[in-house]
Structure formats: structure tokens, C-alpha cells
Image 1 (cartoon, rainbow, N blue to C red):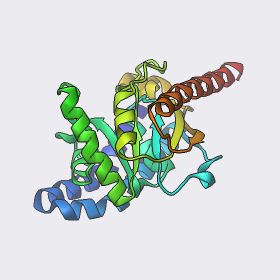
Image 2 (image 1 turned 180 degrees about the vertical axis):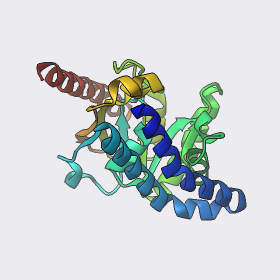
Image 3 (image 1 turned 30 degrees about the horizontal axis):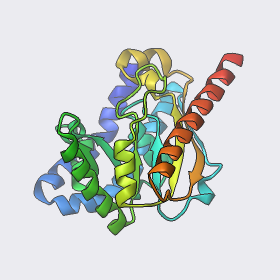
Length: 252
């Protein structure tokens, strides 16, 4: 029943945002992009406010290193849920975030699809040729530099349905940094995998949390060896953080 209530509240609460962005996108894509900062910030906060009100499900953002973030940087993170996107919008500067995501998110999803397409997120066709994917990342890298955006990449490439860390793929990460060298911020998230379905939400949301933490800020890598090292060290850092969080949960 609680899951039904919260889903109903989400539909009602975000419905107006969806209707407005859908209409505006159909009329004027540029105007839709101008609306993005305000809507992204309000929608992401509203989602977690509803979770907290009805399910005692908390946004747990650890801001220990946020004051040390450079002016522009690349975020890479593990990936657990479609809600990872609003999670990052809640945690960082929503107006500047741009995600590398699967192309399917740009089609027929109220609120999300018009905003992703109108604001030039990198929507990659995972079934396309590697060459085409790299060209899409090249174009995205140029736009990131020109506009001062903060790109977010999930090196696993797909969501972890059980919360375990998957294989990190280096190609897109390295290609982006070749075209747009910048500092790299490693983040860990946990809690989203428990909500990969309505059944998961019903069983696991009550009293739970969605954690996010900045683990390390690396200077901009200067070559392939440094890029690979950062990716490998970042994966170890994320795994260690997941182990720490889950060990604390068991002790409680």
C-alpha cells in the first residue's frame, strides 16, 4: 500500500513538470533547455522528499570533499538505478550535470526524455558500432568544454541489479579524457539497486537510504597510463566504500 501511495504521489507531483516539458519541447527545444536547471533541481529534491515523507527513505549525501571540487571535472561512479540521475542532481550542481546514458532514455519517458534530449546529454546507442559511439563521445566532449558542464560517466555501462560492482570499461572514459582533459572525481553510491522494481521498492525502501560520497579527486590525467590507473584505483576505492557501508549495516 505504501508503495502505491508513493508512486501515486510521484505521478501527481511530477505530472505537471512532465506535461509542461513535453509541450514546450514539442514547440521550442531551446526554451525547454532553458527550463532545465530549475526543473532538474526541483524534481530531484521532490523525489527524495516524497521518499523521506512516506517511506522514511533518506538521501544520505556525504559532502566531505565538495568544498575541494575544481571548477570543472569528470565524475565517474558505480551505477545501480535509474534514480542515480536524480541522486546526482540532488547532490551536485544539477544545472551543469550532463550524463553519458543509454539512448533508450531519450525515447518516450515523460519529463526525462525531453530534458535529456534538449540539453545535449550523451545518449549512446549500445547496439551501435564502437566507432559511432566514440564519435558521439567526441561531440559530447566538445560541448562539455564549450559550456563548462560537469560530465558523469558510469564505466560499468549498465545498472547492477544486485549491488555488486561490475566490470569497468575503459574505452569511453579514456576517449572523453583524450578530447577533454580535466580532473576526475570518483564517487560511490549505494542503495539504488534495492529499488530496481516495484517489488524491490515495497520490500526495501522503508527506513532505507540512498548513499553517495566523493572518494577522491584526481588531477587531470596526462596520458593513457594515468587514465587507466585512475580507473583502476577508482574501482578499488568504490569497492572499499561499498564494503564499509555494508559492514556497518550488518553490525547495526
